[in-house]
Length: 384
Image (cartoon, rainbow, N blue to C red):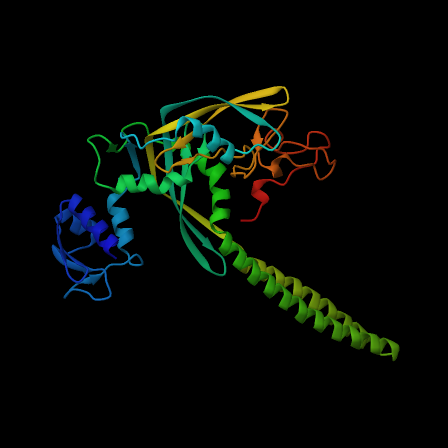
């Protein structure tokens, strides 16, 4: 609760309010007229954040409407920021650069040559989203996407260090500012479309696994119940047929069988609707940061072909940024390189065609196999 109190105090003080901390876990607020109107506050008020409230204080929590009030008051302010990290945070010794790359950039069917490495700067784009997944249960998560803009490598390990840097008060003049013109808004659509869905699948995997287990359990119960009903009616129908029952009775039993079949399929459809996953994505903030890095220039070699790229080792996180599979936009443990265009992809995206068994690169041929025209399953068809 101390973090929430500090956030509210700093926000109100920046808007011109007089704010004083009181115990236990409270704030005393003297609000100017524009804050009174925007937040629905009297001129003088008290708010509390802990289990015990100061005298006369209203409770503020993450579940209250205060988050919505502050968002309406701030509008678009605070959604975009630019940070310039001036200080050098160190780098690995020269002889360790290639060792780090060989450990983290593993090629299955190709090799690489280190051309040179250098100290330089690059820009990272950090996007923050609020994700709500709703099914029979509801789950909310904050999802970070951090992209190295120089080579579109994924650098999610930079999210926490960058946020800690921005939240600290130790900034040089001009180091942290709102961008006047260099807004990353144009890039959000492309970045989110390619990376956000795999990221959501990964972050919500435990939630999805639990939902699938509950759905499988309910489907099994439904199947057992209707199978027992169907067997019982089928048994009676068989006995009456052997005993020479009337046509009307046999017809009634047959209609019951058909009714059970229809009811079963209707119940299955209800269950699928119940467990269907609905994803709501809301963009929160973006930060563009200019950071010193150690850059390794590589030549990737596959048979007679070669392709140039670079990888950045970031001193803030002390890790190497990860190149993405150029087809499904995930981070492979082991990279494969295709023969046609030397795309680096995961093993699934350079696998044999299910129809003709010929190996095909999904980055070169995103829709169908070039040899037999078998259509791949697209990302839009994959369930979250």
